[in-house]
Image (cartoon, rainbow over all chains, first blue to last red; front, side, top):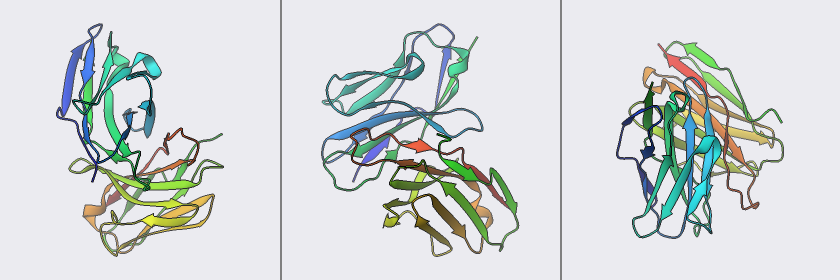
Length: 115
Length: 115
């Protein structure tokens, strides 16, 4: 079985400061990892993904995430937060070696960026 | 492309009534997913289809829920009879398998309120 944990329900950051949203995962095989963002009253939007290759993945809106296999983590980061980054962030995993097709999401972390 | 299109955006109904949610995936995508989002349980996968065939419906909460995909461009999620605990945001998502991209595209969701 595969699972995703986002240990923080909410992360508060001041505008201009770096932000980190944590994610750890569990899969039996090798992972595909994703971050999605949900703005108020909107659907989920793709931010970035790790499939293979470089462990540091750069995505939309200046976000990046680092795949750490030994720690089974895929934390989302941004060097300088914007108020407009305030949203709900979801980490997701799929087992690359499993013939199934399911994406499992974490519970989400609400990011609040204050001016 | 218009993206994944869901209708209606909002649905308010009374307990016991039948509810039908609709989804039009992105043209050319061959996998379709129905997710439910609630405060308590986060994002849950209800069912997904590959090439119009249901692959895994283990996430469907009970027999009151059913989903169909009569063709590659249309899917429905039906709840009959509806109950207040079904109130949630229901998301449809689609992707094209076999490309190595793995990116999932979400619709804007249907906000369901069962009174």
